[in-house]
Image 1: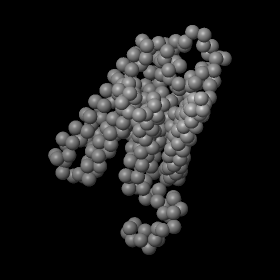
Image 2: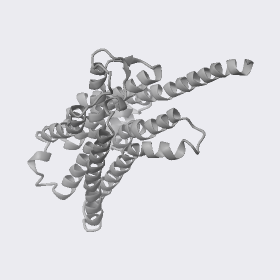
Image 3: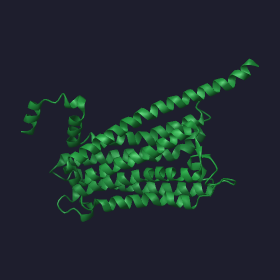
Image 4: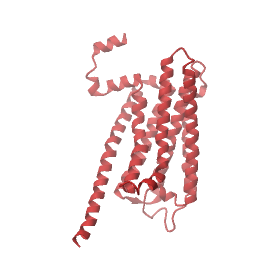
Length: 316
């Protein structure tokens, strides 16, 4: 009798400890990410020459999109951890932003790969659409495309019987809006086609730059950097695509691994949704010599170590 009464208490204590650990892992990384985002945007705003390059404009757009994605997804994560329930009418906009920005990430990666391709093969006769003053047209097009799939998802939304959009409190999850199996299958199919097209674009740019690397005798350093950048785009796309394997992985591993379904979902959320976006500003930002030098000057711990005599010698 004593063991039976202690079991629920132990389970509740274990669940609370699991929630605390998950929150303590996510929140510090999220704060560090926001700090780097604000620092980068401050550098871009203070040095207008960055906006004379399509590459830096797209990079800024990627940081802003990832910030929206993390704000929405981390909010959904905290609400789920706290068991907070509210009506669908308030949940739907948060899910829309989270889905649209998640789909926008591979579009931005493929666009940045194409920008490197155009910069390498058409350095003097770059098409007008890829110039800094017109790049906003591409950005608006990416937003429009990324909003198509969640819009279709909301149009086809079929809630469970007895659920009122304005009053019934529910946990804010995608399964709330995807109650129909046909709707879920339709969404998975569209996502598969969407990511396949983006993968083909990145693979095309990588192969083209790789084939031309041996033929181009001048500016081989920039070509090599572009090749590595496109390769990193492909790696980040692969991490994002792994998020779609979560249902299959949970079905195969939950019974074989001593982890609950909630823990498996958190591992997938952290590794394939949060981690690629935490790493993207570090990979693409700190690899750039110009931006890296401004970041060191802007940070107090590095700025105090800079020797002005060395800086004069470097500028000479």
